[in-house]
Image: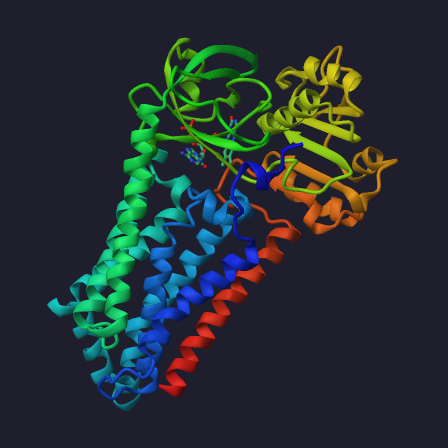
Length: 483
Ligand SMILES: Cc1cc2nc3c(=O)[nH]c(=O)nc-3n(C[C@H](O)[C@H](O)[C@H](O)COP(=O)(O)OP(=O)(O)OC[C@H]3O[C@@H](n4cnc5c(N)ncnc54)[C@H](O)[C@@H]3O)c2cc1C
């Protein structure tokens, strides 16, 4: 059986990434410590420390957007996006506090003078790039929180997001080098030049090299099959000269089509296939502008594929038995895993749950039923509503059904892999923990970054991420105290 480490180079763990993030945040403080700057009040030093750390943090956001497998591949897309969002909030707080802390000593001595000093910072030409960066960061965070309510297409929002992020980082860098007490010279100034160069390199990779690759390693749509209500299966094959993909079942790719093969227009889709078979299969449900026209794509259409990405794979988790759960189009990677187990003759016990709203919405149910005879597999299709002739379960995937599925399996060595709508994922994840599965054995992937309800696992992760922010805040306080 191939392993993740054989197929892909080793990638850092979550703990290593958290440590790397801390070290990156602390680096400008370490370089600035002991530098001879004009005398400053501890409040001003705290403001300076937050500004220095926030600038590094904003640059790091360019690599925590989930597009660099070698950096964040082991975390899985859910955790990466959760970190990306939480870090953005932390940065917004740090950047807002940055000018405010500078005026605290003046404000405490004379509030009117404090307000005048703040006004000066916000309006003086020398500080303009810093103010523009601050404003862009606030617009960026608010427009992300309100994304689903904004009257614009996802692609438009994404383009604005990238441009605003560039304004934030380069406005911030200019501000630091132009007026920063610690940044005007010496090692901190060098750090900012290196940071700027790295951000440009990231942009060149994402929107230059990957755009080139989408055009020079094209794929083609070999066939398209309607599966269920507004759901399609695409058979995508490499064109001559494009290498066969190296991936693990359950991973996902970013797809574009036709002349719109530019990274800004790509969409993530799970691979519903086994790497033992040539090409890729994607199962796509109509959900908006891009997916609504999927069923009209003509065979032969040029397709751009960037990937693979993600950790939703059998190789990444040590399982003696498997519980695979797909809700709605979340069945796509689950079908990929089942096809892969069948192709490789994997004889581990596997229970598969397929939940859909209505019996008409099931895709590839016959194929999944047929897999029961070749694998050590039991399938439980559940429809929320019944229909004449429907023989499967009716209702939701509740505790009783999960308990029944786990009968005969040791919960401690069973790995549950789940993909589906947010509310289902959250509820089932918490119930599986109650039924004795260890936290690290409950794996899930959501198809939407939009937020929504959180599971116990999500909340535990959030606390760990907040702890990283807490250490950085403490470091700013320490810098102010000893500076
Ligand atoms: C890791 C992952 C795997 C996925 N696998 C599948 C799959 O196998 N089959 C399937 O049908 N769907 C899958 N999706 C969901 C799919 O990407 C969206 O339904 C699709 O991008 C919607 O685009 P749209 O323009 O049709 O709809 P829109 O109306 O533009 O978007 C609907 C929602 O989809 C999300 N979305 C849209 N565009 C993007 C984008 N470029 N990047 C990230 N999110 C976006 C947003 O949350 C948006 O609110 C997956 C999503 C993720 C994150």
